[in-house]
Length: 63
View 1 (tube, helix red, strand yellow):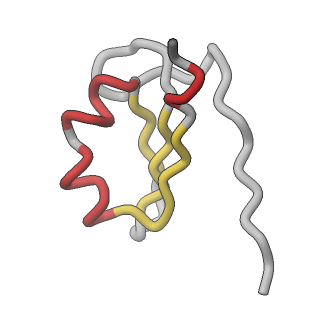
View 2 (spheres, rainbow, N blue to C red; view 1 turned 180 degrees about the vertical axis):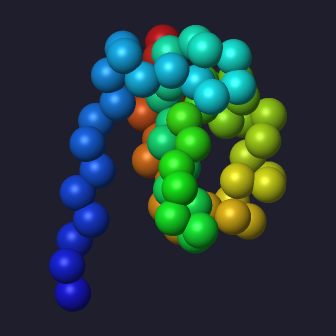
View 3 (tube, rainbow, N blue to C red; view 1 turned 90 degrees about the vertical axis):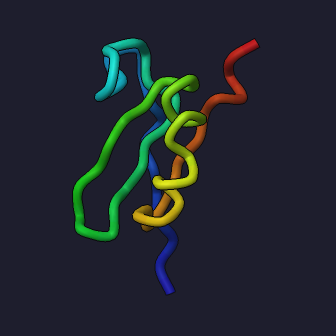
C-alpha cells in the first residue's frame, strides 16, 4: 500500500468559485481536482463528499 502525498496549498492557489485563497483541495473520483476557499468548501461540503476521492483541508490555518 502506498501513501498519498498531498502538496500543501500556497497563496497562489485560488478558489475555483470566487478567486479567494484556497484552503481546500478536492480530488475527484473522475480524476480532476477543485480548489475552494473556506467559505465555499463549507457551502458545498455535502456534494463534495459525494464526489471526492480525497479532501485535503487546510482551513485549520484560518484563525
